[in-house]
Picture (cartoon, rainbow, N blue to C red):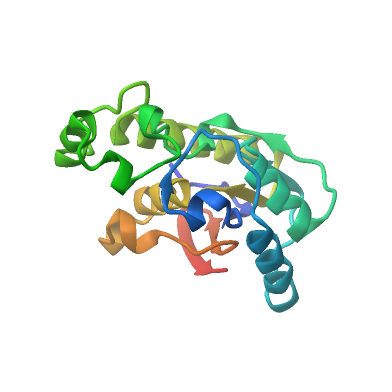
Length: 200
């Protein structure tokens, strides 16, 4: 699957900055909200201390928080949108907290089996994972076909964790162990049939 036919392809996965929904610990995925003031300040501070990777191709999920993060960390660069890399669709639970949902019958049913139970007007975790992996695989194929060796993807923590868990199954880490902090993530390097990663 990951054979690069002699190319050395690096794909960096970076989580967007903080939003008010993160600060208030709300469920949100498809909600299109901007970075918070604290999130913007944090990104500028991180930019001073982290050497972010260079890239020929930049990709976001198309949501404001990813585009704003890209612009702060990398400047006014051209980018393409891959909507398969949006965060999980929390449907009726979007922008609500645990306290608001804890007595909701649909929420109680969902948390009993997150992998299989669908959120009203949202998606199951499995549907989310299938969408994300399809999106990442298409990016990898695009890199092979067009000989693109350096890619930066600014997306979401759940997306990044899903990709890492899928590609590096041999590490036996669960979904939560792969979750990156704001403006952090992983750079994955593919060379022939080998693959490895380093943290950003």
